Length: 266
Ligand SMILES: [Zn+2]
Ligand SMILES: [Zn+2]
Ligand SMILES: [Zn+2]
Image (cartoon, rainbow, N blue to C red; front, side, top):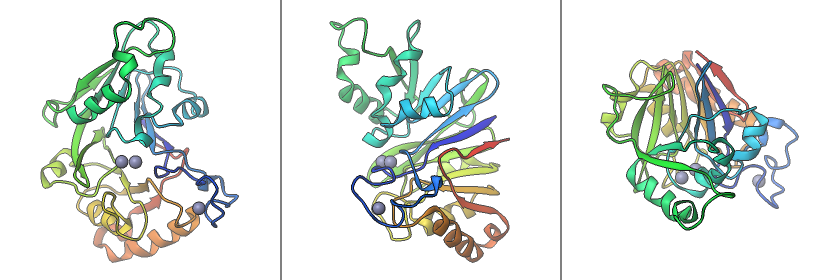
């Protein structure tokens, strides 16, 4: 199974429009970040987690030719505003979109035209919204040949959904992981986790909160994601390398910033 990070930037993306800061003017390709999202695939199954505004560009960049389902973490614009572009995959059948009921209701509102029976044909995707909350570690959601487990999280006061598959967990956007959700990510090896910046934020983990959470899991490869433009990739890498020494078992783990194109196979 392979996970590809197709976007690792916060809601503005990087560079931020009009910004001349060091990170936004960096020549390092790893400092160009699409909005946070990922592709999960094996030999016969292709699933995307979140369809942000650059979904089309990401699908082209990473050669997405098949799509079995979309998993949504939540309905903020940076995670769903590319959903219309899945219509190339829904010519013959609807594409299931899984998330929690609150997210699905928001999607239904912001894609109202998709669900209006009066408009048929060109210009809209066929989407089936499916509640994921009945699935859990005992009863996973099977898509093709991959089992997924939803991981309830809080993003400020908004409930969001992380996803576990194989020995991966993909957790963005969050500021709190309920204790019961740790049961859903037992025995993971790879953790992709929200880590916006060093300063605290009301709705996102900062670097330290991401590391505190990672330390409580079994993950040995930890990649932070959803970065704002406070630091360059190189600076975040150095910061995390220093910070991980303060966290018991993490000192011996890979703790690095994710970047667009990061691909991990287990
Ligand atoms: Zn976000
Ligand atoms: Zn900037
Ligand atoms: Zn968000």
